[in-house]
Figure: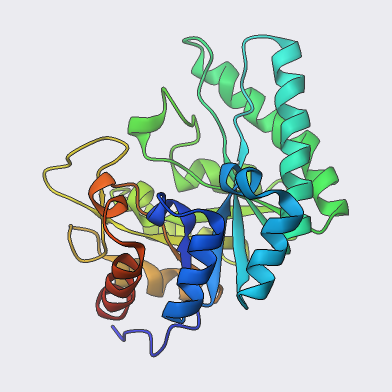
Length: 273
């Protein structure tokens, strides 16, 4: 398996340097020669939407994606409408920031009825997709590891994400493949093949053993057990040649100087991605 030859596809997902503001992250990427950045909506809100766009442009960066839309299930119709309004704002923000990909973290069940929650996800995407299409934004369904089903998403396998995405054209809805969430799946490579032509994003980190924390326990590439390069090559074989986001939730990494994190990220990207 061949390593990537350069950093042209490397993207810093903002959460990896969570202590940094959007300006800090953009300027850090420029110093490190990282050409892409993936933005989070709360960081954009802190800086302001138009100022965020200017900061990214002035740093010479491109935006690989905006995180996140989704969170469709809710206990009441009024709350579901409010969440749809927020999703439309997220689409508008993505368009303004110059990315064509809004990452969907689809949301948990508001009660014990997981089947009803999944139906709400289906309905939410069906309502949002035409609005996004009109604005040139694609919806990227990111399946989350099953341990997050109760808190963050009832879409937990790439097969589920593919099934939803296949109801739309690849220019409307696709999938985002994050190795942390899907590496364990015995059907993974068949589902990557199935996603051919509609893979909208690829995220890398590692699964540490023992896992120190459900949310904050991701590792830098090479510190865990995931066959990252094998998954990357399968994704590439199915048509994805876009940015590769390093997305790591880990307080020990957050507490390190951001420039050091980017240097390590580049080193491990060459070694393991």
